[in-house]
Image (tube, rainbow, N blue to C red):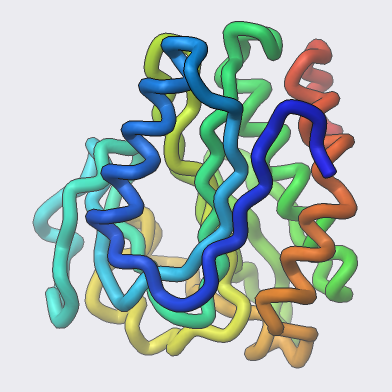
Length: 219
């Protein structure tokens, strides 16, 4: 599917700590030239993860385990019905532009959501993927959180397909209390993991190509 990049889909629920350890080991192997790059799609049991900018005041009701993630950003939630994508990619040979990488990840997820009939968009000053509810309000449907170590990326994105949205009530998601979260299911769009994975696969060549190209703001 992707030259020199492993595409892995793990069924079932993968414990967050186990996934984090495996991702860290894979990134170290990529840095050492001992492993291929990786796009890893999975689900987690319910968990709150804390980024490096997490504010304890935004942990409202820790009803699930709370794990320090090591990525950028604040608190987020992962759980069943949410597609998580971990990206272990070597920016050392893909342009060395972290801002371009984040922009490209957002564009990739937006393109995949479009295949489901969901109009996603970027929002100035707010990292992540946004859409409009039927009443016109903006709501967050996808989160982006990354870390780059020796030009190899870790972490990636999460997209709400059919999670229990009430689980987000235990935190202030990404520190943005004024915006609700939504999902494909809540919007009446297709929400099967396999359907979204196929949409991601369709758009991945363009995503990888954009990592090596100059960033054009507004596209």
